Structures are given as structure tokens and as C-alpha cells.
Length: 68
Image 1 (cartoon, rainbow, N blue to C red):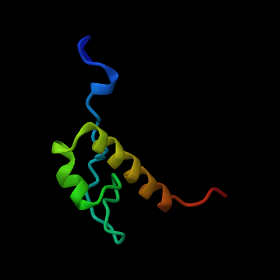
Image 2 (cartoon, rainbow, N blue to C red):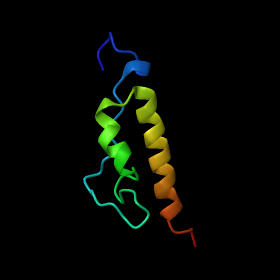
Image 3 (cartoon, rainbow, N blue to C red):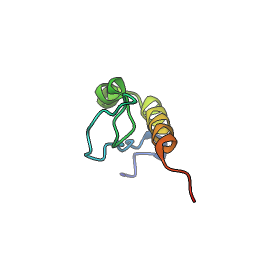
Image 4 (cartoon, one colour):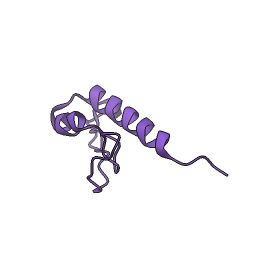
């Protein structure tokens, strides 16, 4: 991050993990994004990207097995 770039302006890293497969629940099993979110990612605003990351993480968390 350059000195002229603030944290609020910093690029949001893509949630892509390289495991690109749409599962039975209609979102990527690697990153948790739905197809429209994947398509829109590169042109989405920073705020939208942050929201996509949050929603994708929540989808993946629903699929995690409960601790024993």
C-alpha cells in the first residue's frame, strides 16, 4: 500500500481460493460466492466487495461441521 493510499481505499483481496466449483447450494465451494458475485467482483465498489466477502464467509461457515 503506497503512502497516498489509505486503508479505506486499499484494494479488497478476492476471496477466490482457486477451487472454482458451484456446489449443490448454488455457490462456489471454494470461496462461497454465488455466480453473480463472481462475475461482478472486478467492477464492484469497495463497499460491495466487502459485503460480498462477508456474505461468502457466512455461507461457507454454515457448511462447516459442528465441533465435537
